[in-house]
Image 1 (tube, rainbow, N blue to C red):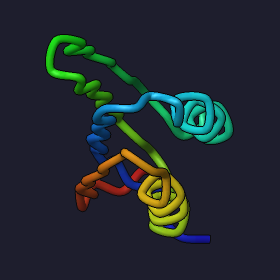
Image 2: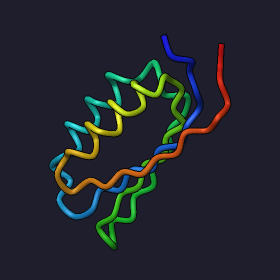
Image 3: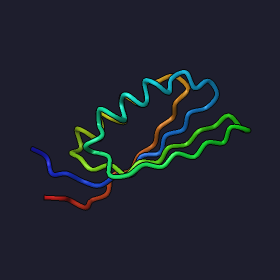
Length: 86
């Protein structure tokens, strides 16, 4: 199994938030990998930001961000550190 690493994921939902339920299901599914998360709504601009600290293998990281990236009205960016966790 790959070594686990720490990474940061930024998620932006813009406009129609009907995708929120699907996004929440993904966040729940990967809940064991999520160390922390913070959501910041900007209702006036119609932009909702979620930042996540994620711990997992490269495959888990890619799977999670890939599924999020396929959601409509959602943008995702991520960075994986080189810090390995036993």
